[in-house]
Length: 373
Image 1 (cartoon, rainbow, N blue to C red):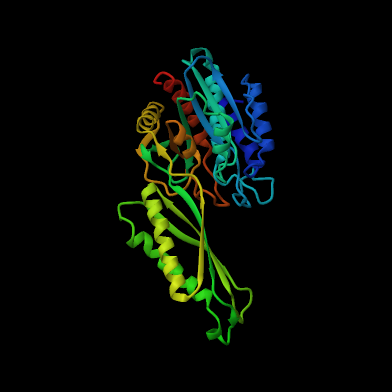
Image 2: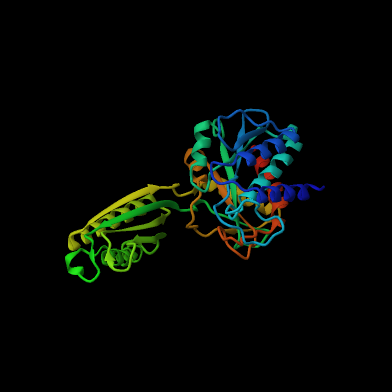
């Protein structure tokens, strides 16, 4: 079996056996087995799932990271190696990322004696619930690391294309829950109550003006209400309604201004309607900010490796690789996967042709980065 065929075989085994965030026990066991067979010994970090390994010797230290968790999605891709677990699927391509970084580890092991230092390989759990990077940092996986690199497959790019950017790249992720409490009543006598549904409907509309009228048009922001729940029958006005949604920005100042404006609008509606409105914010990862130097370095190595490179557009999705970049410099990159369906879609099907070239690229990137730290 060739190098590329082996990586695809590993990817398909991972794809058939997906595990949700924090439950990647079998995935971790497979990774441990595959690395050990290649002569790469995992390091003794205290992690419930996921693992860390290291290749090379010396003081200089670069890290590569892959995420390993799947999503609670029923697969409809139709591929012969579809998920064997009902309701769980690698719909974001973390199986692809894992096989790429596995391949990079194998190539680095082949050149271990020539490395100008060490390469630490992070197989991170729980990216989808934004907890895995923090667990890696707490365990000490970044100790002594000078720079870190990671990837996400990009279904909107053809295979063979590469994109990244210095500075802000992926957005911060905030979740909000708004609970509106009015007064319930019989549907035939609405004047005896305080209709929380009418208030919620107007509040949803008002919130849409924040991005368009309260934020500089040159700043990126998404404020979306994604869930509304209230009432349980047709002839009763419910006492309360709950809204849920997300805020995405690339700058902390914009993030805080939008949060403040949402609070002001809610307070105004509460006063006008004599109702109670409570807002709870849940913080996800911060904006992912690439180091300018390492982003340009990663791009130059990609050109040498034969990729067609481009400057990435701002991405409104979240990515907890941002946690690493809060601690040390590095770069996160996009590699084309040419899927006809996008990330988190049940028919997502990235082109496996990206795997071997990407593995060789990351091995080359790590080796060259050791010469520049």
